[in-house]
Length: 385
Image (tube, rainbow, N blue to C red):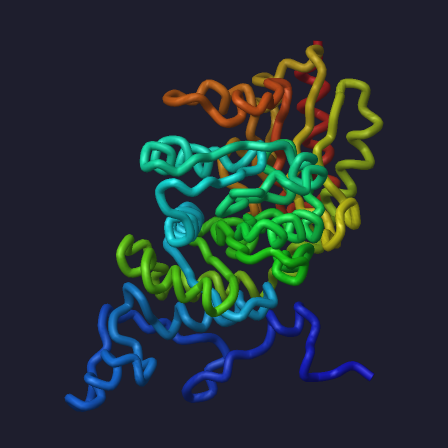
């Protein structure tokens, strides 16, 4: 018999909120500060003897409701929301490392995380090394002397998955903390904390929101590690999550499981057909069970085409796919690597780690899979030499 105290993730996410007046969604508490009824109430809060909200930069009931739902979804003890995915990444890393520490980072990391490490952390005396996913798994001593292992599974653009239980075991042996960006899989398809990882973060702008109308981030971990972030970087860097965005994110979580199943079905539809196309040289999209703990396939994938395909022409011929840098929403998007490789500034992470200019990233939305495939097939036929 199923234990009603341990519901499935879909039930947890869709559970009605028990709010004031019978509200089934968290109310938007749009206020900057919270007043106290008495001098003693204020003194007790300042002394940490109560948890009454003081100021929305660090504490807000609407944000707290979203954080509690995310902590439950990721099987963590606590969570903290941020104004963006990069705020979540930077606030987490800066709370956990100091000058002289070393970060071991997986190759093909999200480009702005790479730029954070290279442009901000390295000049402040933090060493960063980059390693293929296979090295994290194979080399049991890679994390010796490392303070923090920064992971993605799968990684950006080429979507290399990691054996997270194996990496977590190596990290524990050497006392290294593990942080993973779980934006691609979401807790629907992967729960890294249950696999031994210490900290999970998300660009909540992506699948967590699901509606392309919110920029946000969230971190889930133990109470102790979230306490470090709340004590240091959340209040002092000030990249707090706003009540309205938290409300939208809670709305997105209600349908996360259903949306991820639809994204997966569309991705499976595409992979089956892409594999039969002679102009396709590689498909990057890890499926269920290719590594322990990964139970599904998201709608974000990349495809490499041979030189018979005129990629700019192909992208311009697409009708249902818009050109855009984000992903995880209801709409389908396309991102050609050869355009991103022209980005101005310091060395692009994609260039450093050898991403092919023939690669095109697809974010498959919630449109009809048949319509999306017909669109891709037509654009491909019109752009092939």
